[in-house]
Image (cartoon, rainbow, N blue to C red; front, side, top):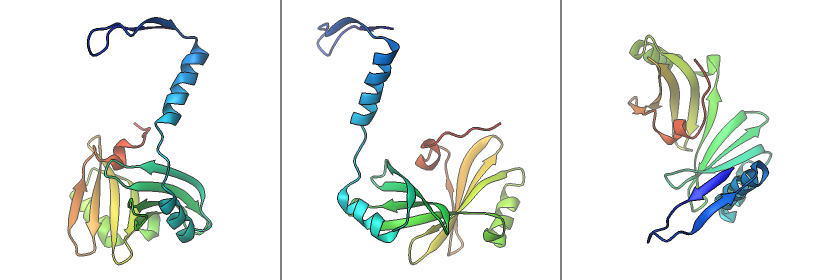
Length: 172
């Protein structure tokens, strides 16, 4: 594969042509990905480990709003997500709900508001002193969310939210 790098900021030619084999190109891309990966701060890692002692299959992500999100597996709860502030404080954790675990009154509200929509996933977000329920929906070809709070109000989570843009969805 040939790469042509034409000009820099002042028009000076920095690199004429470089020939890279597919192995070298893959190696360069891998090195770039590793170099751009942020390391989880020790305070956050220690806070997570002390709270979720038996967590397995741990995967960290740095979110655009400045929080560390961790997806992990806990035997009793299945997969969970937790969010930590930069100070190492647990902001919330989420559990995916299935079937009877989903509050019926909320499911009825969603079906009434989006009769042609399909519920993709439902999560309970626990903030310690409050809980909210997040419904991920596909309606008229659009993926979005509805966040239900304990006080009864709800809020739309748009399809361009990090919640949706940070993962790949495969479907119809």
